[in-house]
Length: 238
Image (cartoon, rainbow, N blue to C red; front, side, top):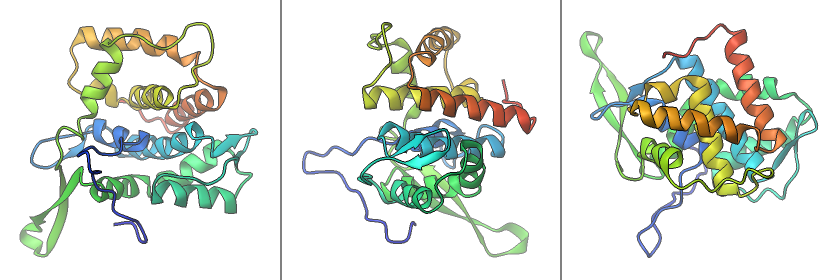
């Protein structure tokens, strides 16, 4: 669990705070009922989680690309993990986007998973260490409804289209959904999820149209992730 984090619980109406970009990416990139396991290459998983953490701060205008990554907001992050990432950017501003992706990818998976445990979407499941003894750790989705990232994407791909075709998309919630979808596409997680061919075709069509409508910072982030994947010769599983 993240040191110094405050547990986020359902409010008095019984609703939860929405999951963030990196949370949704982590969930779509994993599968399994009793215990979750990655659907994609571990390096791609780390890259996607790192990209999600940066995307959250970009959507909330807490960081900017000028072209290096620099702080730009008031530091009003809604959770401890986002604040720790922003704090690091403030301390080490001036590095390029690729450097930050590589740096954050070192521990992004564990940190995002901890945040999901913190909000009761994931639960740790102790498992036997086998012949060597001891114990290992595994995780399962504890809140199936809240943790269903696949349903979020299916609704995004097949629901009523609200993104304008006349200019840049600016609504934060919409930007977060679309960025999540593009991260899933670039890392191969989208192809590994359980979607029908029709939903995938419609999703590909919409993502192609949305990509040009993203603000330049988010578009650059998606391009950088694609470039990082290509540079490391990681191939998404199709």
